[in-house]
Image 1: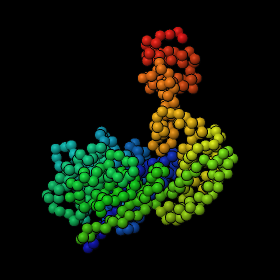
Image 2 (image 1 turned 45 degrees about the horizontal axis):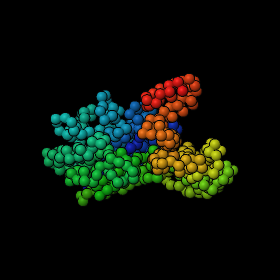
Image 3 (image 1 turned 60 degrees about the vertical axis):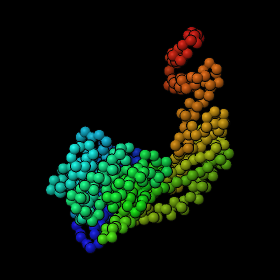
Image 4 (image 1 turned 120 degrees about the vertical axis):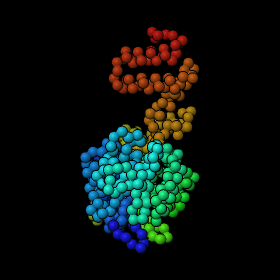
Length: 457
């Protein structure tokens, strides 16, 4: 490992999710490995002295042989250059309450990475020092080139409860071992207000004790790149794992330490491009008009797609990569939904864009649905999902509740009657016999309205 008057240089990356076969597409699993490996090779080219990883090396807790091989092959690139890798567990890597050796602990025991973990439940020190001559033992912190790195594994909602204890434990180690040139804490948690709609993040007030003893808080978990207060850094995931994430920056930090502190620079990771098209169907009065206008919109979007594909971080070995196309249909259909040919849409997009995969989100509403929404007593938000689309099950339940409420006999029992209607509908669609359906109705009526009588009706 190199030494210089400027201090050590390191890479901070996170959330590789090796093994994620997004959309069930094999090439997306391959993408996860390619992005992971290219990040490592780029960091080596940058001359880093060590690497820190913020958790979620794997996507699934049940790691298969291919994912394990991919992870080991990538980490061996660092090992070949004598670059130590320090990491922590993310929520995808291990259960909160482990019973057996997990795969990060396996990599730790093999010397592929230094796995750090805080002992917040035991009677001993919160952070045990890593011993390089005993790679199989658990570690809480490690000293590399004058930098002291502590690790806080994923703790979920409990994270905020432990931050004061973590800060005190770091302070104690630094008092006993001497102040390092730089103190890093790795954590797998999110900071509030950096991702719209995200709940459960750590507040800035909760971070105050940590800020007093840490120079660099290296995070993982949230897949969006952000930094805060010149000491909190989250590089985001290396790849986009859904269409919303594809709109964010993803990558890694290269950090140079020096006598005055450190300087960090964010780099985009090499990954597959996503491209989003939003098409409003309001002005399409017939299926033929829809197809004509959609093809025109797609043709107009192609130059922007081709331009995006030219960004270096979207290429593979200098070659343009086929995109994942994210198509969002919205608006009020002027013709029957049965005439909306989604397969034709997918085939056209694949033909014109050479897409690896076409993800279609159909948020259109038919005139019939719009009329129903106007008649409902509850607000439209109650029957929409988190993406703003009509949830058919919620809409059906709302309609059944309204029907039940219109009958004075069923008032105060709308929910139960609506549930019964749903059960009966499912029974009919499942081709249950009329006798069985009638028996279901009879039993539910006895249960809900024991005084109504008329068992033989």
